Image 1: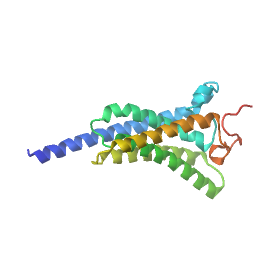
Image 2: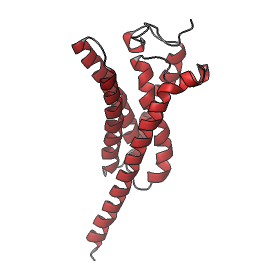
Image 3: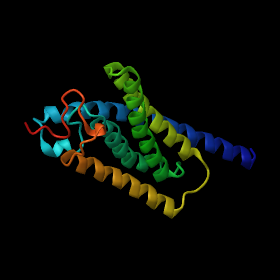
Length: 192
């Protein structure tokens, strides 16, 4: 066998392994995101649990169902793919940002068009957002170009900023539609 053929086979093996891992990660994210929809209620409305689980039916709180599972799985996945994935930190940050952006844009677009939200469409948006985010991550991790330390730092800062926003806005909720529970009209934790 020629060296080029060996390199090509090795590349295909790495790509297949990365794809299998991304599919597993996607399934786990869907499962964890679904759990996070209910865990706050199950905990007796524990305020610590509120920082990472949905506390109401606002779009913002539903973004947690995507952000936290994808963030957690990105940390865990790193140890399995660090030798075969390129641009890992950047790819995962862009994937997470794409997933949460898809939810915001899709939800407000379709509810603006029909005047209400529908549970089935909301669930489909959740599922599609995670699949989309992980697919984007996968595509970016397959790219050959190497990331720079500056791009890794920027991606890390963006992810940490999002994490801080999710925690802070749980307890100090801005009164804008993104944070409004459209079923109750409440913003953030209902203290009633």
